[in-house]
Image (cartoon, rainbow over all chains, first blue to last red; front, side):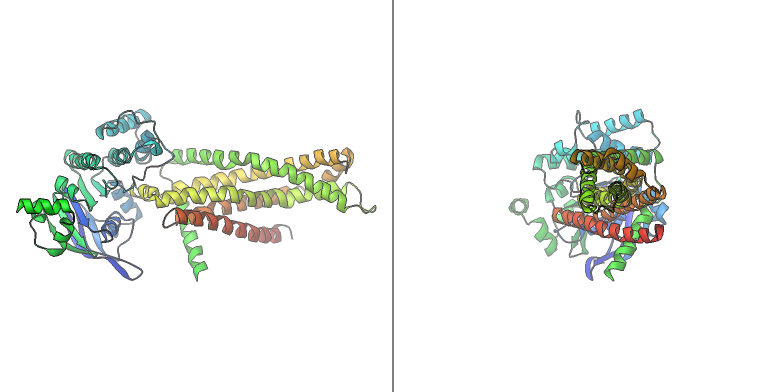
Length: 251
Length: 246
């Protein structure tokens, strides 16, 4: 479980995230949604320590991240897996080397154990026969799957996904979404997904937080979000013609 | 005030870069990898430039020393001192700062804008240490080797082309390059080259590491890294000459 308490962050005097508190539950796909520029990525960066918040704290299973020293933070980070928007795969390494990398740096496994674990993770994300390929030779969906394999290689307790299906076709996006959900339930991970894709929310969202202009505007389940009367949430959820049609049919 | 901000941030980055490595064996492998990329990969350009500059210095010196009171072997003396004291350590470092510096700044800058450095941090890895330290160690170890290589090839180039041009004889050239030779000059050159190597690896790494934005900013970081390396190398050339020779 990850708990955030009164997180605020500003850049050059401009408030990006204002006083957000929320609890992300274990074994569930927690989602942070909101328009572009609403502060979702900044919030997640504050949660993993890539940006220090101006105020507030993040509790990883009760361990207050910002009260820890450098080594304490490092220990928590070893439990974190993160899927970046662009994949953030190391260009100079093959797919297998990318997945083996965190194992080499953070564990004392033998070469064969590392390779076995990497192959297991790659198989888990349905990537076979891609071990020797370089990131530049992969499609967008494959890159995301390698990034997931790398993120789960060290068996993290917390998985952060920053717009995991951006730039993907709808079919591949669903594959990635379902993969995240399956992994979350299988390994009982606390997963946090940032997205502005409502298909994703409906597909895998279990606990949802809507951020508007840097503030937590709404929280609830995916069933609740489809029925809420909150204007800003409705503007976001029913922004597309598809969702509007769905709503009218639903009503 | 901006300069103090950059100095402060540079020293903090270096402090992080020299932090305890997570896995010594992986860092050691990365040092060898960087030695190959930065050092072995620069042998060709250093060889070509050194041979030609050696030849040019010899021929130019011979024409400058046309006064009958100046002995011909002075060409060898001038050639040796120019190569050992200045060309091999400083000019080669400036050339390498252009080649290696832009490569380091753009590599680390691209890793920054494509979130690869964030990925390292999330894994609990000291990204500054992992990316910068092996490059600095490789450069500091390999640049003195390149400097000796440059001295040797420069003097050889001067010898071959001096004889071919007929401006100096075999005996006079060899007598000149050995005349009143001070071994400390080589030590001085090697100390300079090690300091310049630190600058040419760390300054572009600093600019790459703090790149913000996209492709345009990566290019700007690369340019800044090279320009500031040049300025610092020349400044330290003056400081070290004052400290070590005067």
